[in-house]
Image (cartoon, rainbow, N blue to C red):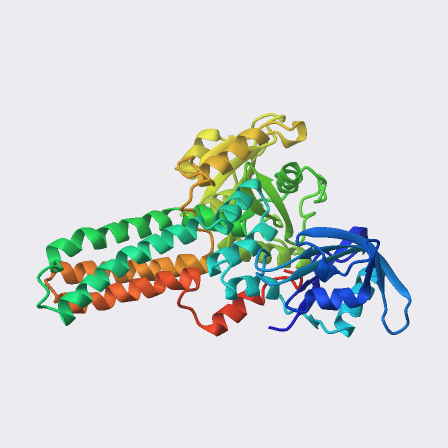
Length: 459
């Protein structure tokens, strides 16, 4: 493979920036540009060491940058190739000058995710571990980061490989029975022997899928919509959860005209908070557009925070909101408990039915802890922790597991109906292939290219 290079740190001002090279020419290219205090070339130096010196433009002889150069010789590197990381001063001009210098002297600009792609193609990691790298970068909470770390360490991969091995042993025994029926020392695979094996595989896949809802939330965040009539405290709730004055708060109804979006970590649950315009009938054209947008995001939400006013009587609009969130995960918040009570709490309980009700006074910062606990307990009951090896968070993995479950259920149905073993074998082979797609053992090049194109350049 040719030698690739890219900036591996965020663009902007900072203490340092890193330009990374990977490939068989990574060290020779850097040697042409680098002069260190030891007088030796980088190729003569030991692996996994860092060297102080300067980069020079070989054409002009001018000093380009003062740098620290890390040399890591394959195969004990991320890509299993020779890797060089040039640490320069953090700044747009300096890091781009270094990158341009290595590109002008034999390296090629890396494609998005190409370093991780090479780690996968060179066998250092499998596909699920490669995807976990991006999950780690994008993690918004400690729980999400722990899940990504677990996948990077190969927890999911090991479980998938174990399941595939179980299936492979069954398939091999069936093949031997078919091709060499005269072998008396090989036990014949019967429906009776096959049933516990396929049931075991089914139970393991189901156990993985049980964690998928929580895992997907950790990975992608929980789309959380704050709804209610105007002036019930929706924007105050957003500010309380974010712990910053992101939304304008006034006593004037209809202040929020559009959907305001913020990310927040609530007890390990990443929320994508959407503060909406108060839902009511209005003649104001701009406010009416905001109300329509509020109704639209309401349909797409994972969690609804329905806010009511403690100091107002329930209205028809409040009752309509309860009807709109029927069947959805909803927490009812009765706000402004610092004011005299006007709301009928018994009526609220009847309308809320099974929904959790929390009372708050956001002005006095009361009830926020109870709300955060209600959100956390609604989605994470404690039965599954992030350290669990069987956590599944990737949408592609979940889809493949669902297909695998369907295929193994088809195999079980075949066994129960007494279908010939060689026909059942077709469904078992399908399960084996689908599980292989999760870790990249049986996956098309087009999918690999698509997955790695989502990475940043230097990764």
